[in-house]
Length: 150
Length: 74
Image (cartoon, rainbow over all chains, first blue to last red):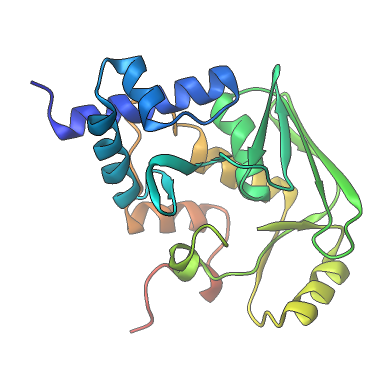
């Protein structure tokens, strides 16, 4: 019989596998179906992964994921085209994290946080190209005080 | 974490939002941070970094001022 730790690893890997394959963040039901687990068991694994900050759950719905970092389950101002898929990054750091996580080239379409001018960042052959500076507004110690808004 | 055209635009945003403390970095440093942080996220062997490991990542990139501190001041 698998331990909770073994189930959590399998659920996390399957969650990312489905997300990367389809471009859509799967629910606990989807992940459970992919592993032959009940929705209840997959939801319990989501809860443990959320408590361990491996993922961020949708507020009020433990069967859904808001952030499987670096990916966002919902649209954001950071649109990342990587390979043949389009994803949303949670922020500019996570948007760069998508090509890092997938080990592929990518184009990040976003805009200046001040003036709104469209900006594009490219990752090609392991190098980043583009203009601009990255700005963190919340000190590292407080990122998890409200990770969704950070 | 946002992208700005330049430091002037970041400073203007800080004034507008009333943000006193901030951390800025180049795209190159951000890309390196993303690589160090996320390259293994899909792997079965991934686990959340300990405080010491996270501090080591920041230190490797020269992110060593108070903004990047992960423990409360003693």
